[in-house]
Length: 76
Image (cartoon, rainbow, N blue to C red; front, side, top):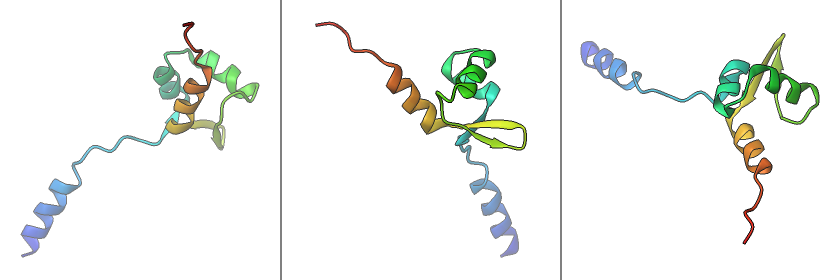
């Protein structure tokens, strides 16, 4: 019985979960931007971020909202 539980636990924990928080390099890659540009957005407070110690992290939902806010409508 214990072997069955261990086997099922190992197979269920192998699922890949996308991270909610990205570090500055990951966030820059996600936005197709440079790290320097992302730092400028942080310094000017134009993008939401959290700071853990001296590390900036970005919520992927905030990045999506930032991109949506930057879009312009096509002319009709």
